[in-house]
Length: 151
Image (cartoon, rainbow, N blue to C red):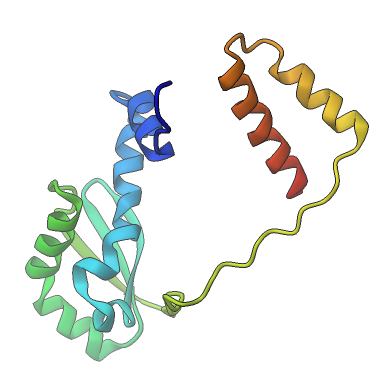
């Protein structure tokens, strides 16, 4: 490996041509939603599910549901534009509670890490022994260690 690669890029390469690749693309809908539709709409409607081209939105009130119904084609075009491909073909809306997106200046709380026992450190070393590349082995050990420290 000559340079660091984003995990998303690695996942895309690994999953290319599999059903999981499609699910990964679909998951981006939640990430681009607010940028696609704007913060005002996003504060009243959020993606809830996606299946076979139909994006289900949870909408917080009947008036907003009616308004968004008139904007369906525009919303679909905006989301697909942000995605860079035509994944969303239809919108379905249901009433429900819409949680506010986190404020941009809010920092996620760092996970509390715990000290690993000697047994755990030995187990991690054993798990990574089969990886022959030293760099990859170190990354693998680091990922397992971080996961264990957080649980």
